[in-house]
Length: 271
Image 1 (cartoon, rainbow, N blue to C red):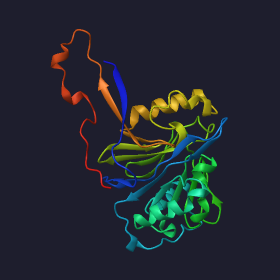
Image 2 (cartoon, one colour; image 1 turned 135 degrees about the vertical axis):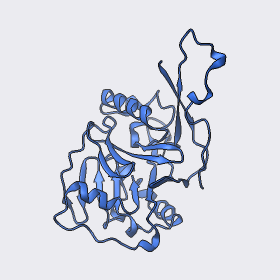
Image 3 (tube, one colour; image 1 turned 120 degrees about the vertical axis):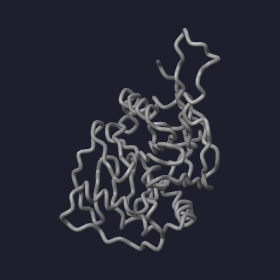
């Protein structure tokens, strides 16, 4: 039995909080890409997402950086005990980003890990706001102060940060080093924050022209659609992925089970 995948927008406006078993996901700022003027000029900025451990609160205080002997796996898991920011938008969005974080009770010094899905300026333009955070930008991982650690991230080997929380290698848009953040166990299922693997919902007519490696990106897009229940794209609103099982030709379509459609009910989402 083959499957059919369709997408639909996720209802609600940022900031949009999705609670989870171990981590909640907050869609802080919605990215955009809009033609401007004549020619090929585009005004754009990247989406920003906050991942919050359930055990974290503003009263938790600041964490000390891990000792020098930490390996990447342990350092990443330690960094994931506090607020995690996925992409930071461009430097022109500085005040909007600070305001959105403050609205969630998060100060820049509270952020313990920043993940940059890729190295374009509209996605990592505010790294300087978080000098106390560990940084995973594309495949480069460093602790505060610039101590870089090898980690072995590959398409066949995700980085596990905590229960249901991983970083995947999803190459294509910016070359071979793009990454995505996967958060399982939320009220909406598995949320994937994918940078520009998807520019927006319904980007089939445009993503290839913006890709440095369309073949790799096509593979990454299929992986995302095969895993995610919600996708946070780089330049648009989050969208849901709904999978329907195709019935065999001999099946009476009037007797199809309604539970074959995944995600047809809207779980609780807090704004």
